[in-house]
Length: 167
Image (cartoon, rainbow, N blue to C red; front, side, top):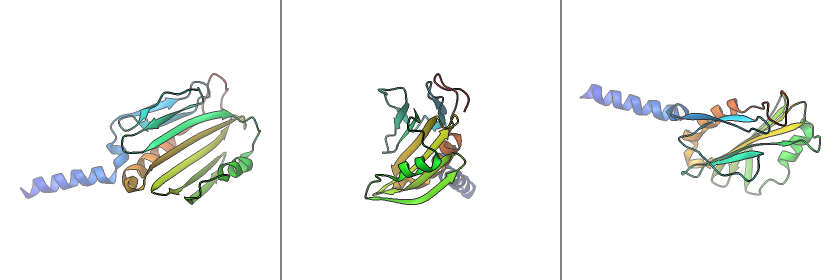
């Protein structure tokens, strides 16, 4: 009897400790026009119809959502200008808790009221394309979504699309 309880508690702890691993079906979304791609848990997120070919929005029944998109860098923004643009016109109820600037990318995360956000802006194709990933999820679900966001962020890439050459 006790061994069954130990096994059940161990299994439950494994699911709680690794929610990203608990997602059974991961798919890759790839934008045909720009080549931007990301892995996402398809058993959690449902793609929404898109009016353009710049990206896609995905929603979950628990209130989470994410978008992945790319656009031509028509203003020829460098990384510093992209960082400035990303900081402009932020909501008043937003609090940025993490900011990072890497080789060709900017990452911001924080809170908007009772929602957590994570966004990554990636400059690619010799500065000609801006790729973006943003996810919003209820703060109460942080334990579920933080590992998912880590995996999604690591998989977020610029790629070869109809309108682009190699990144």
